Image (tube, rainbow, N blue to C red):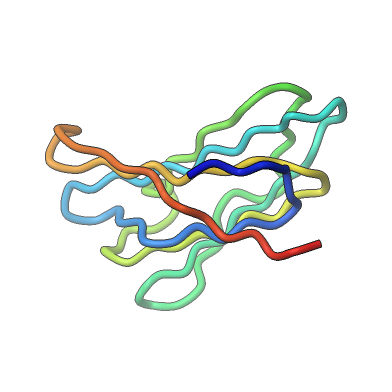
Length: 109
C-alpha cells in the first residue's frame, strides 16, 4: 500500500530492534524545500527520543536505523516534519533472509 500525498506527521507501527531484528525508518522529501524532521520512538519501556532536527534536502531520502536509538521487541515511530514528507518503516529479520514494510497512518490535514 502506498500513499498519495506527503504529510508533516507519520505514525509507523510494529518495529523491532532486539533479538536480531532490524527496523529502518525511511523519510523522503519530495518537495522543493529542505525540511527538518524529528523521530520519536515508543518502546515497551515508554517514549524514547530518536534523531532530532535532521535536515533533509529537496528530492532526497534519509534512512534511520532505529536500533541506534532503542533496543526492544516492540518499537513504533512518530515522524514529525516541518514540511510534507513520505515515510516507510522497513523491518528485517533472521540475517536479512526476510523483510517487510509497514502500512502507515498519517492524520488528516
